[in-house]
Length: 264
Image (tube, rainbow, N blue to C red):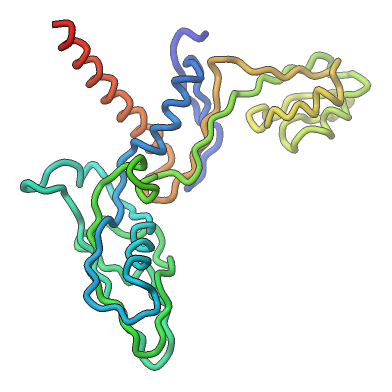
C-alpha cells in the first residue's frame, strides 16, 4: 500500500469530475463515495404554502416537483440555528396564464436571497391553460441525501479500481487485435507497436487480454481507485468530494470524542 493518500484529477468539466485516489483501502474510498450521496448538505425546497392553484396538478404533486428542483447555494450559509428555528430561504411563485397557455418554469421562482436560485431557469413546473393560476410560497432548508433524494448533490457517484495496463510484448502478432478489441483511447497500435494511451479510460472488460494474452496485462490494486462524480448542478463536482471528506472527518472526530468519554 502507498505510504500516503494522493488525489489527482483525471478528467473534469462543468458538471462532472473523475479523480484518482491512491493510498487508501477500497472500504475507505467507498465510504467517501457514499458520503457524497448521503451526507453532503444541500439546499432544497421542503415546505410549500399553496395560496392559489387552479392548474390541473394536485397541490402535493406541485410541492414534490418544486422540491426536486436543484438550488444553487452555499449550504453552510444556511446550516445551524436562526433564532431558535432552522435557517431557511423563501421563494415566491405567482404565475398566471393569459389568453394563451403558459408553461411555468423555474425562472418564475423569485428568491429572497439572490444567491439562491435554480440551477437552470428552464425547468418545467406546470402547464397552465388560459386563466389558470399558481400562487405559492416555498421554503428551502438544508438537508442531506439520507433524508430524501432531493437533497442529494450528485446524480452519479461511482467507484471503480484504477486499471493498471502493462504491454508485455508491443510487437506481438496479436497486438493489433488487442488495440482493436479495446475501447477507443485506451490502447494504440501504430508503427507495428502497441502502446498504452489512456489507461484510466479502461473499463476492465479484459477484451484486450482475451485478444492478445501474450501481449497485454491488465490488473487491479487494492489501494488505487477512480471516483467519478456527476453533480446535479447545486454544488461544483470537486467541492462535493471536498465536502464529503469534511463531513466524514467531522463524524470521525465526534466518534473519537464519545469513545474517549466512555474510557473516562
